[in-house]
Length: 83
Image 1 (cartoon, rainbow, N blue to C red):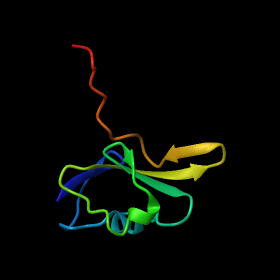
Image 2 (cartoon, helix red, strand yellow):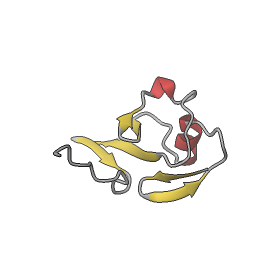
Image 3 (cartoon, rainbow, N blue to C red):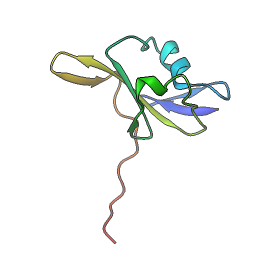
Image 4 (cartoon, one colour):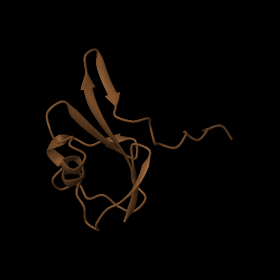
């Protein structure tokens, strides 16, 4: 399946979990977080959280003073809610 991780398209096996992706990204340690399609996924859910075709994944790491995305954001620009 194809998905976007921190702005780069990656092909991963079907049924890949977020925990597996985080291990491949060397981001499974403390001080790391993940968001899928703009929603933070709690660390306790990574083992069972299945990724899907077309997902936008952000891998974040803690830095002194806040959080930093490892690479620029890959999420699409928000759509205007004005009609």
